[in-house]
Length: 161
Image (cartoon, rainbow, N blue to C red; front, side, top):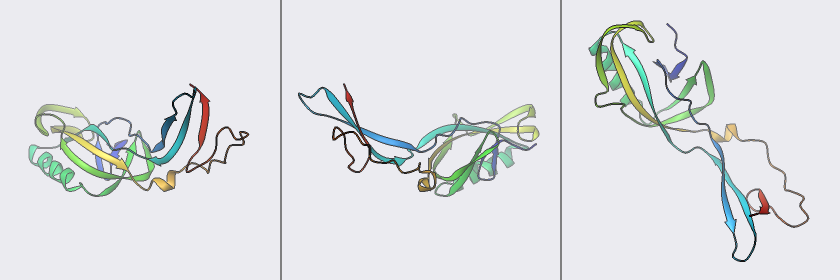
């Protein structure tokens, strides 16, 4: 059975929606002024950790798969979620057991990525989107606000607090 959830070539039964890079901001306030400014400081991805489940035909194949997950640390891999491959790669920062034991034996496993399985692997992945420059939004023009705001390394929006 083909999986709609993948990290690289590793197929999973399910894992949560992976976060994408986003605009980061800082809020600036000054004593005595009833306003604040919002500075756009970049476009980046913070590392995220999620638990992914997959199955295997035997305990030994599950153990081999677990070792392969651990070997992926330090690699850049694509992520497919819900059948859609994200355009950027993800740095694999860490892979740990998702529960007390990463590999567990199951009886009469039906479904999953294989159809029938004898073991399940619960793994906790820590990833960070890389190649973020490819996902940058279009340039933001300097606001024409009559001198109330300004542009200095990012968009400044001045609003009443």
